[in-house]
Image (cartoon, rainbow, N blue to C red):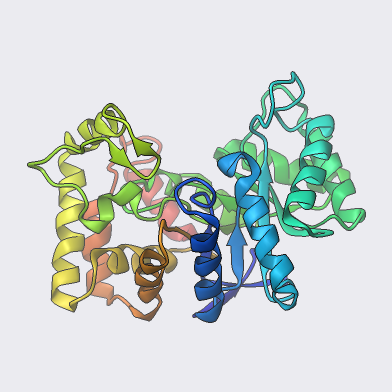
Length: 339
């Protein structure tokens, strides 16, 4: 396992993180604890959750695991998030001081800890003044409840605004950004990744396998049945499949990932994860699995190093080909200079 600093901080984390959205929903408690045990045994140190994962059950499961293994707390870099509804009250959503204060305390209770290492805004809130949000986060750090703060699902201008406002007011700055990022979703490279890198934020990609597309799960000849990791629903997943399947770029990427996997004698997931973990700005790739076996398989990507020629093939097949201005040839040249 490789280790890197958490953005522009001195905190060290594993290059692969354990995402726990499945805990308490698709993965029961014993299975979740088995994943945590295996992840740490393989050298993993970064565990990511959120209050809304299984309506708090994910945090509770992690909390009980930590309670049974108290020595692990110092080894684990523990991250959680808040922003989305946990109740039906008018203030049970957003990034207001009122909501975040209640959300943070609730997360600490469920996790059974006095503080979390990384507290992330799960999304931008257009209704709450950003200064109010950042001031609360600064207070939470000064109170010892949080060590570092991060952002998730922020646009480039939102990220920059948060960084600039924190600097202007003397607040603790964010150190990470958690966006969707994979071979099929590279649009964040146009502005968001350069903004993160310019400000010292480490990128923590979620959905690194594109919802299963980069594992070879889907084919041209067979539409999904509706069986997903969120349960059986004959309508779920079909719309997304049709949209992605209609793009030739999708199949070009899947084909190249499959070809390289065959040439290397490794699963397709290893190729996709190896490409992502070495992208500029990436600190740690968040892995999500239903079973311990799936987690172990994905962790195998840590031993794969792609050649420059293989990366070039993947880059060319997955290029999102934006309109020429401002992200086309001009933007590509500018991004190359930054990245």
